[in-house]
Length: 182
Image (cartoon, rainbow, N blue to C red; front, side, top):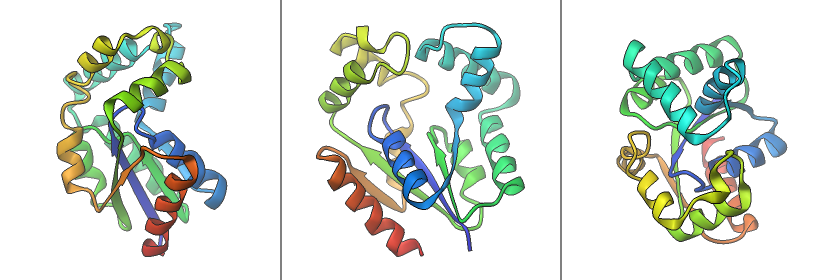
């Protein structure tokens, strides 16, 4: 049976780190909502910023429904089965409701304190504007339309990880979950 791990959590909580660990250790297949958005941004020759990702996501969802990106990822997974698949960045109930019906699906909520995540933003600089954020800007983003449902989704999660320690501690928590799913 395939294991499908859906990840939800606030930005910079560690979803990408968990994904990378599972890819390296288990050769998991990785699916990201933001990858779809980044492909569009790149094709349009726009800067890869959080604001551009949000604008494109909201436009797609407005025109085609909140579940549009989940339908794309669900079809990708069905067309390319893997022993372990990771769906990184579930943010809407409609997405969760589509994906939870995949056989072997488990939702993991990854969280970390706001200050920890803010410090990660300053260091990571994955997005063009990330390292320029003030704590006030970062906190304001937490109430944006792509962020507000995440904590409620976390309440539905099969597993929760608080990622506020070392990489080793995070990996240990992930291993405990994987051992239960196998």
